[in-house]
Length: 323
Image (tube, rainbow, N blue to C red; front, side, top):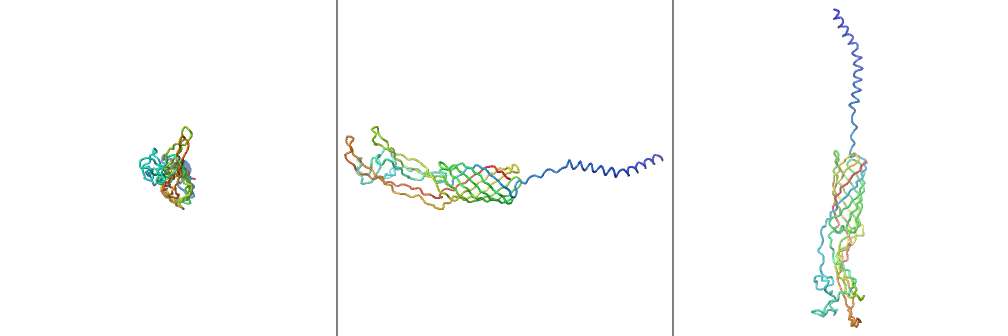
């Protein structure tokens, strides 16, 4: 009976104390649970509205018109169209009675009569911007995204066109579709470009003095020289690319754009007639005794200017800083 009474009293006491124990226990456990199960800080949004992006990139540009034209191998003063031979005399006006070789008197003059000829005989590089098929370059652009998907900006680019730097700027519009760390995008813009050059072939003649100090010989040769573009042309651009965010504020970008060059004033090359006058001087014992006028004619190419054959592709790889 005593055991039953004690058991009953213990159960009664437990019933009375249990609410207090339960009230204290869960509060302490809940506190510990909050400390252990603190939620992690939210992951940043990699692509945001009202975002400023700065892209710094290097590039390789591909000419739309590749290769070269065949060089000229004929003396521009030769009426017969024969291959150029620096050991032969120039062909001159048919009325010049200076030729004494077979078939003479004929239309020719000794080489040293026209002492400083420089005649543009033709275009060599098909591309009229780079002067070759491809060049390296670089640039940067700044964009503001008013939403996660659309932004506008400005872009500056420079290309190491051979012998003459080419550069310009554009206003751009970009549309992107972010998912996770990736964002494929399309872009387009309008602006301007300046510089660059076209390669032309020139026929040259230079005088060479003999040991007595009198001009008796000339050196005739061809050179390939650039003719620079020194006027602004309109530039249009379309392209697509992909961006990858390494962190919330730093990313990598790569894209390809096609660039169209437009000229407001397109002036084609022109061919003009060049006339050189000389004298066929006959000497005896070093003393001139007679002189015959000699007229030498050739056609020269006068380069025009415009936007023909200047379109190019641009592959860009760079780093993005986002704020």
